[in-house]
Length: 345
Ligand SMILES: Nc1ncnc2c1ncn2[C@@H]1O[C@H](COP(=O)(O)OP(=O)(O)OP(=O)(O)O)[C@@H](O)[C@H]1O
Image 1: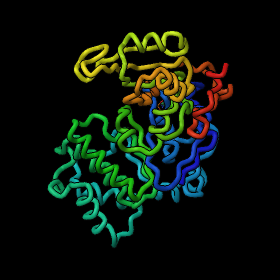
Image 2: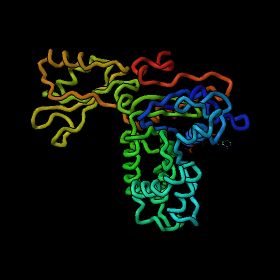
Image 3: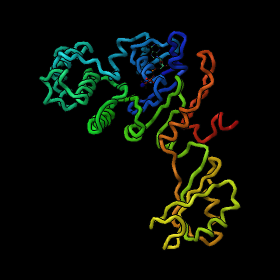
Image 4: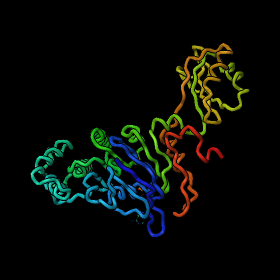
C-alpha cells in the first residue's frame, strides 16, 4: 500500500529526516512515534504530497507521489496536526467544500456528507458554525473531511493531541473503526495509544528510523537484560543461599500477597531476578530450584514497557548528524532477537 524508499528531507542544510525506509501493507494501523522534532510531521507531509523529499521516493498503491500527485492524493486522507477548518463555515458547508476540493462527483456529495455526519457523530452539529465547535468536534470534522473522498490510506498527525480524556477515547474508537477498512498511519506522543490502537509501530529519532515492529513483540524481546518474577515455597534465606553463587543474576525480594517483604505466612517468597544479558535463564532456574527441592509456585517473564523501549531508543544521541553520512539499521521485528550493532560491540 505504501512504500517509503530511502527518503530524506534537508531544510536549509539541516536534517529533517534521513534515509527513511519502510513499507505499509493494506489494513495495517501503524503508530509513528518519536520525540519532538524527530521528523514525524515532515514524513507525513511528504507521504501526502505536501512536501517534496530532497532524496528518495514514495509510492502509494503502485503510484509515485512525486509523478502522479493528483491520482495519489485521491487515495490518501490527511488529518494534519491542526485541521484546516474555516471558522465561518457550518459543518455542512465545510464538508461540501472539502468534497468539491477532493473531486467527489457532484451527484454523490449530498449522500457522502450525510454518511460522514452520521459516521462521525456530527448529526446535532450539522448546521453549527465551525467556530462554535469544541476541540473534540473540530477533530471529528477534520476526520470527516479527511475521509469524505473514501481514501484507502489515512495519515493522521497527532489526532488526539489537545483533547480531554473523554474526547481521546471517542477519537480512538473512531480510528479503530476506520482501521477496519482503511490503512492508517498515525503519529502520536501518547505511548498507550500505540498499544491499544496499532498492530505495528515505527519509532523515529533525529530523523532516522530506529525501530519497526509490533509493540507486543518488542515488549517481550528487546533490552539488554532478562527479567523474571518468581514465587517459591521457601524461606528468603534458602533462596539467597541457593542463588548467591549465581553471579549473572541480580535478586530483589518483592512484596508477597500479605504485603510483607520476605517469607510470608504461607511460607513463600516473591523475587524478581534480573540477568545481566538478554539470555533466557528460566530453564536453568527451574532445575536449580527443583534440584534443591524448592517448589516454584509461579514464574513469569517480565516485559519491557513501551515507555522503556521508547526511552532506550530515543535518548541515545545519533553520531551521524551530517546528512551525508550513513544510517544505522533500525531494530526490526525479524531481527530483534539478534543483538543490534551497538549491543554486539
Ligand atoms: N519548514 C521547516 N523549515 C526548517 N526546518 C524545519 C521545518 N519543518 C521542520 N523542520 C525541522 O525538521 C525537524 C523535524 O521536524 P518535524 O516537525 O517533522 O518533527 P516532529 O517529529 O513532527 O515534531 P513534533 O512532535 O514536535 O511535532 C526538526 O528539526 C524541525 O526543526
